[in-house]
Image (cartoon, rainbow, N blue to C red; front, side, top):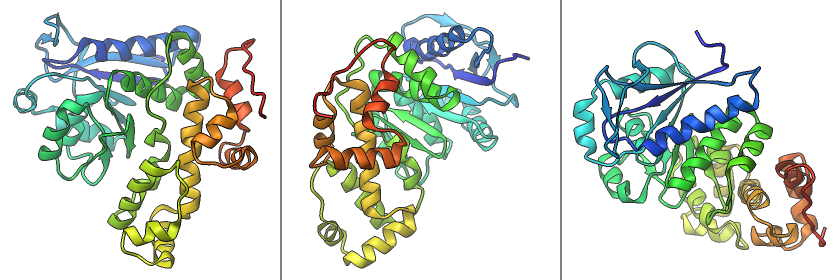
Amino acid sequence: MSSAKWRVALLIFNGAWASTVYGSLELFHSVNLRQPKDKQFHCELVSANSQPIQLYGGQTIQSDAVIGDEPYDLIMLAHYWGDFQDLIEQYPTIPPWLVQQHASGARIAGVNSGIFWAAQAGLLDGGRATTYWRHLREFELRYPKVQWQANQASVEHSRIYSSNGQNASMDLSLHLVEKFCGASIAAGLARDISFDSRRTYDLNLINIAGFRQHRDIGIHRAQDWLDEHFTQSIELQHLANQIGMSKRTFIRRFQKATGELPSRYLQRLRIEAAKHRLGNTQDSIKTIGMGVGYRDISSFSKVFKSLADVTPREYRQRLRPSGVKHIDNDV
């Protein structure tokens, strides 16, 4: 038995993309190399049976283990290209295995189209996920009980993670490193491997996914709208009217469903977007604050510290290598 803290299964099957298998494997290996005396991850290539696996690029590989009762802390589901119905028929034991592992506490991460396995297992029914754009329509038709988030880079629902592109899959893996090992290790690793960490998206639903764990459809609609328009000046009365509620009813139902007032939820959306920009752009703190919806820097800094426990400047400094300075003349 390995002495590593966390056991990771990288599920492989015919048609899996090697880059999404080995990319994650090498990322976790890099974490181990940073702390050789305190190994974090024990990774295994796992398949449904002992037969050789032919990857998308034509290479044939053999798994390290076959699925069974062995528990894992994290299961990575590789991106694939092909007929998913054919995969289901080839590997009927994978979905029930995922159900068993998830019930035992495992986190499950589907890289792009790999999330289909979790949907097939029923683990996303009533929940949210994203996927590669080419597969989105197929997934919507096949799994109508899942709320597919086409415009989100990464989404989490009940310990199940999904991503919708090559850059997003790397971000997803880094996020999982943070979950298991902490922000400091994840930030250091990101600096080492990301020669261009800028992204075209700002908001990552992973950090606010807990506020979606309810069944109020009207409030889900309101949250969908806020997710898309959080940088704008928002009147709660206008939002309440859009979903057919009085302002008083809207506030009451929103707080009952999410545990937060709508105004506080909006602040969380803005601060999560600001965190991303602080870590991935050279924009000034004032520019970032105004860009996520705040009219002045003092309000932005006050809200940021109330939710992140540090100021925007301190948060950015945590993500910068020692000795690297960033000039913010406006704070």
